[in-house]
Structure formats: C-alpha cells, structure tokens
Image 1: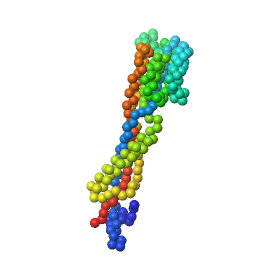
Image 2: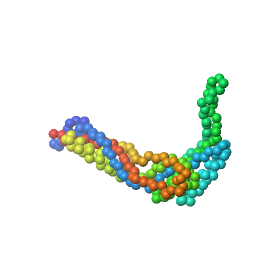
Image 3: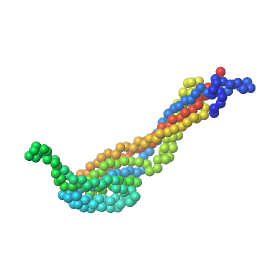
Image 4: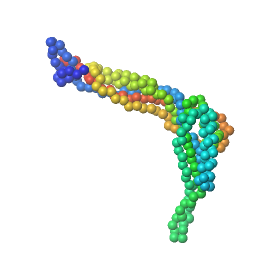
Length: 239
C-alpha cells in the first residue's frame, strides 16, 4: 500500500511511527515443468520424376493417394492430414559448352520433378514408428522431420507459473532482508513463455526400408518454461 510515508522518511501520527518506503525491488523468476509428449507431427511426402510434367504428376498422384489411404487405414483421421507443400519443377542440366561466340550455353530441361508433402498429426505415439515405416513402404520417399508436443499444455504452464513466482519471491525476500526491509504490495507482474520442443530431424527413405522393422522412436520429454518479472514495494522500518 502507498502512504505519505512513501514521500518522507517517516511520519508521526498519535505517537506511532509509520513504515517508510525505500523504493521497489524487481526480480525475475524462472519456473520449468518437464512432461512426456502425447502427440507428434511428421512431414511426409512423395517426390517423382518424369519425362514430362504430366508424367511426373500422374506418378506422384498415384503414390500420394496410396500414402494417404495407408495413413487413414492406420487410424489417422482426415483432420490430421494436411497438405503442406506441392511443387512442379523442371530438372535442368548444365553444361560447360559454349556457342560460336564463346558464350555459355543455357541449361536444358531434362524431365520434371513433382513433390507433394502432407503434415500428419499422430495422436497415438505408440503407432508413430509403424506409421513411419508403412509410409515408406507404400511410396513416401521424403520424411522431412518429426516434432513432438503436448495436446493441452495449459496445466503444465500453470505449474510453471507457480514455480516461477515462488522463485521470484524467494529471491526478492532475500534482497529485501539484506537491505534491512521487507516486501510489501506487488506493483507489477509480467511473464514470458517458453517451450523447449526438440528440433525436427530429417529422415530420408531408402528402397530397402520397405522390409525393415518399425522405425525406433524415442519421444523423450519436453520443457514448459515460464519467466516472470515481479516488482514489489520495499518497506523499511523507520528508526
């Protein structure tokens, strides 16, 4: 609470000495909660080649249809399959040859490449290895990454908030005591949020993976962190 005592060293009223406010103390606190993920996202796709763009696209469409059908057969819902990339590009062949005037010859087109990728959300992590393996089996030849997350992190962040505030208060009380005073009312609180999600790692398919065992996957743990800045009034007893 703020009084006139905040403006003067002390004020006498009816023989009582009111506390004097020496200023404020501002401290940052950190709270972190670890939790195992309960879902994952993968970027899986098909890249095909063809003498013409149409040929490459037809081959890609067939392979992608098989991939999506397999994902759905493995229990992936339609809402969890989203197209995230599509491209049609010519394959250029470069040469060191030069024309009669000595200028470099332009590259020539030697076929076309079509790429189509989908972002797949896997809500049953025990199926992730099987889904990765089957995706390659039915034609996926690119898996651009795997990332893990928690479907509803709100309670985890709330626990981190409690820990962050407790950390800030413990530090502030230490400083207040060292300064010969104590904490009074809170002036302000602000927070920043952090989420330590392991970076996706690239995976490249090989033809011989089709007969392999399910891909081993280790989900590990994720860190849900909160940093909080808290400012208190610093109260000192007038002498």
